Length: 238
Image 1 (cartoon, rainbow, N blue to C red):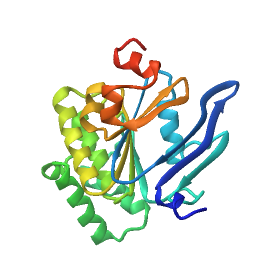
Image 2 (cartoon, rainbow, N blue to C red; image 1 turned 90 degrees about the vertical axis):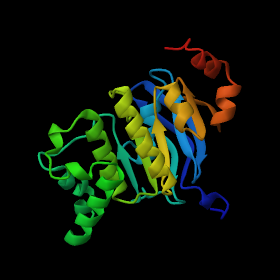
Image 3 (cartoon, one colour; image 1 turned 60 degrees about the vertical axis):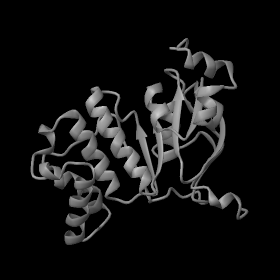
Image 4 (cartoon, rainbow, N blue to C red; image 1 turned 45 degrees about the horizontal axis):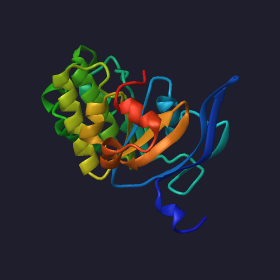
């Protein structure tokens, strides 16, 4: 592989994914670079979450190739936060430290990193509170703290504010922006055009499992090139 290609943290080459006879992702090729926030948009059923799970390595492509930082082996320096995070029946700080424990980080360092992650997401005062009694927005920020504590190079976010009220959404968006500013690459699926406008540096737009546009966010929102994207922005697609 050439040196030029190796600069990308994530590459997809002719990636397809099928479930039985259903083709969900069709021959997608793209290179996701560092330093910008990438938002995946598309109508319901376009394949957004499936594409993200392929990128993260939770699903394997039916055909095609995915490379993480130039290697076919899934990169360890990545994390993912889902729409509804799973919280253990223990304290917020124990939940924040879970990923560090699973990766073998020593106890003292693990506690310090978990505490710092809680501080950065604004939950330090709730460190000893049971995670499952926190509000939905607080639980989502805790999930972000758990991921951020791992110091990933790439963080995947699948509809992270879909079930949150506006105030909680604002707080989660603030944390996402701070994670991106810390140097972590953000790749996010959202159904909210407003959120995409606020957070995206570039947009990956899917239609019926195909990559229709991959372009800077400013260009996408000002003058989409495809009729499907234009219809989506006019809310004509479901």
